[in-house]
Length: 247
Image (cartoon, rainbow, N blue to C red; front, side):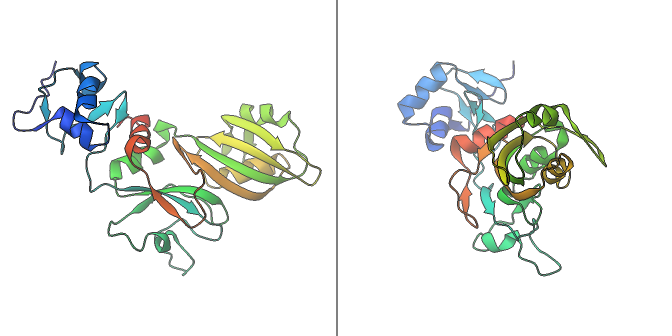
């Protein structure tokens, strides 16, 4: 077993308290109960000291982000905005929503120009890499308004797979939320990252998209965030996101 104690470091309970896990006493209880790990080792000794700049700390499996230079934001991208920080054609891009921030942020993945909803912006390169890499199979959820009356039986077909020009694609989950002869609303979850994959799947089954909104990216939800607005992802929300991709 690796010794995680750093004699010149900061007491672990002080680090936890500074990260928002309650009073020093409450944090001592977390340690004593065996709910804290440092660099993969469970720690239950109250005298343990760590270096907050290098230690990887989890509480109940949720990662603490102790590097204050790292920033991750949720943005509700409006329709008509391209998913880039600078567009050579002069189209509206993502940079306008973070022009007041000093950090150099980059986007995680893309939404096509007419798709609305949640997109993540960060300066944490490792987090961005893992969220975007196919091997981590990060799920995304979309709500689509589509043409026509969608039959309930379509859910099974979408889960089993649709053949597209660049290969098969399938939904992890597909739910019909509302139906009417003119238009229906469906929710689709998948971990595919191919270009315009949701639009192409729905068009292939005869229900072209009228409006498409991404409501969840990994463990982060769009919630009540308004179009064109951002919010900082921090605390347990950020920790859960990091832990979901093995950080």
